[in-house]
Image (cartoon, rainbow, N blue to C red):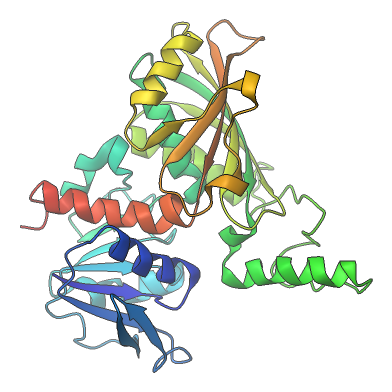
Length: 336
C-alpha cells in the first residue's frame, strides 16, 4: 500500500512511524510531508531514511491509498481536497472535521463500521481524552445504557505537543537552579503546578476541550449520553488519566463492571487496591491499551459507578487509533 503522513516531524507524526512499524502495517511506499521548514529533513522507517517533502497543492497524493494527517486543523481544512482528490482515504487527527455530519468520527472498538461510510473520503480521529473514555464507556454501555458521565481529566504535557514536553523539562531544571521558568506553551508554569484549563473558555464556562468530550462522545456512541468534564493540565510528561463517574439505567455491580472491562477490546484491567495496584502514567507511557482500575460503586447514586483510566494519548489517543482505523478498513473491505 502507498501511505502518506502529513505532519511527519511532529510528536504524533513520529508516533505514526513507530506504530506503523510496530504493527507491521502493509506499507509498500511511504511519503512524508511537512512544512517548508521541515522539508528536506529525514525520518527513519524500517531501517531506511525518508526525506520529508513540503506539503503543496499539487499531485503528490496521486496513487496514495491512506493519508494520515496531523498538522493542525487549519492545514487539514486547506489541504483536504488536495489529499483526497485522487481517492486517498484521509484519516485526520485534527479537530477540523470531527463534528461534521458527513464525516465519521471513529474509535474502532466502539463504532468501527462508521468508517465504512465516508462521502468525502475523510475519517476523523477523535480528541485524545474522548478516545480513552469511550473505549471504557462502551464496556458499560453494553451492560446498561449510560445516562450521565462526570469526568475529570489529568492531561500530560505531551498533549500540547513536542515543544510543550521540552518546556516542562526546562521549567523543572530552571526552578531547581533558582531561575525564572520559561512560559510559552502553557498559560502558567506547569512544573510543580496544575492548570485547570485545557484550550480556550466557551460562553458556558466550559473549555473547548471539555465541550469536545460532550459532543464527540454522543456522536461516537450514537447516544443521548450527557457528559460534564473538567480538564486539567498536569506536570506529567506522557499519558492522560481520567476519573470517571457514570450513571446507568440500572445498577451495574462492581463485579459486572470488572468482568466487562476485562473482556473489552483494547482495555486492560489493573485493579487490586489491597496490593496498591492501579494504573499510573509513570508505568504506561508508550503502551497501547486503555488501563482501568479503582472500580467502585458511587456512594451517592445506586445507579452509579466510578473508575480510573490511564492511556498514552499520543498512542491510543492519536496515532494508534488512526492506524487501527486503517486496519479496520483493510479487514472489512473498506478500501474498495
